[in-house]
Length: 261
Image (cartoon, rainbow, N blue to C red; front, side):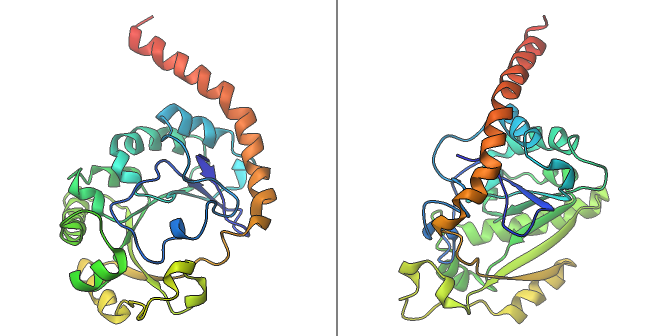
């Protein structure tokens, strides 16, 4: 599984993939579009350790050009809450001051981890609202766990209160996906008798009640095409070459710190 990846035409952004697991199965998700994402493997393999995350980021080619770093991937990164919290300060130290550290979350991790202190570590949190009410949310996000919508809304409220109470300056955006361009849905979803659509104005009102903006996203296009493999290889190969010895050295250093030697 690739730990770091990029999107074509966006050299200023780098993405960190730490887990292929999510409480939701959104009908528009790129997880259902193919085995790769712009040539990267974001699915196959175990979740990386904190040291492996840091080593992969350090090995990323053209790292000095990166202005935005996103914890994202095909999954819910905050299912591995402690790993995110442990890795972010070390990742931030690898970039120039002013680099934006961001995380994309569905908020449904709140079913398992009712914590919001991670917000102190990020400059931007993007939360996938995706719908204006629970009925529509269940149609669009198809949650695998009970109470996913309520957990997400409880997370939003607790996050708002935490930011106000601690005066944390993290920016928050709620997001929805506009499925109008149905030709870019996963193939099995294009034949749906009625594609569920969020009420974007109602979602914008929900965002406004928290004092946040709503970002409307378009469907991701053609990410499953095999033509992207050379692009992914141009990043994967130098990361693999540089990260393996760095990760081993960091594991040894961590072991020595813990053993007191």
